[in-house]
Length: 376
Image 1: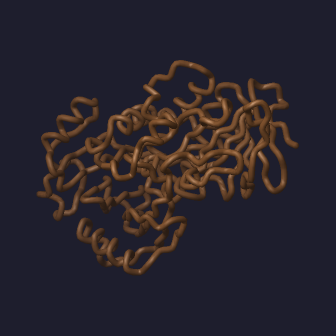
Image 2 (image 1 turned 120 degrees about the horizontal axis):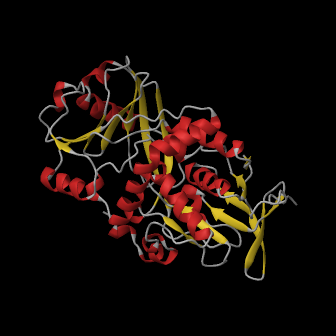
Image 3 (image 1 turned 30 degrees about the horizontal axis):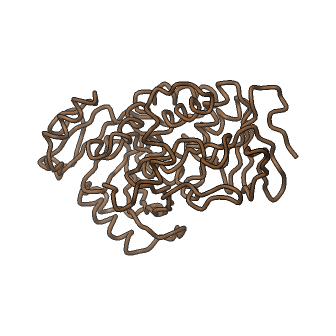
């Protein structure tokens, strides 16, 4: 039996799931002096953390509940410094880029601009003069969000993983949890096929798998996998220099000329298959937005499983079955966006500190009361 707290640090914490939510929670706890071990059923960050686009904002922030807004805006304000610290620790570039986002065909631009003004988010009507854009977007009722940033999420995951290891965290990949040992109303250890890991506390950050539960632990309510298919193109650098969004489709440029196009929302269980019809549709829609894509074929087509939740509102709370088990899961489309603030909120809860954000919307019971039919 392994004891990750044998080093004499504050407490030994085992985190199930080494995606962005698990890694960011580990980073926060390591910085507070705890010993942390992460267990992942696959590779660190190999699921939705790798598969997404890395836009560091809700796609249309004015269309979400305040619970989403609060976490997202707090994270967005902290992201540049958070990434810089991770890059310094790991020696890896996460490709953070404040490239801005142009939202097109906005149904009510005045309401959108008023929301942004109220929430301190920079926004302007029309298209930016300083950004080269295809002529096809010049008159599409645009709202320009100049402060929206992105991170290249596979590289962010690699940097986070490196930072966690640099701070003394331990990561066990291909190490699925199979159950827990309990005593007097507390979990004392996590079992895997190969070993048993002692724990003072346990964090569940199992993404799309959170709705399945674990032997001895109830499933997190109303979380289910939602498949998203995406395409990757390669253009010359500079052809597109800002994120474009219209009617559910986004194009994300990378500095090296790659452009991501996505994404679908498919309730397909744990099936990560892609299909040719979706590839053709995404390619056609992407080329309508950026005609330069019409003449090139995608270099990659993949699918990931988001940890879907009603309203995109995660569960960040103590598990109801055990005092020393906590949850950080269900961020749906915005796990990368919300990572810093979610980790901060959970770490404060675990240490009994007053959190900077109202935790009520993220409580287990609040999630149990939400329904998918209520989602916007």
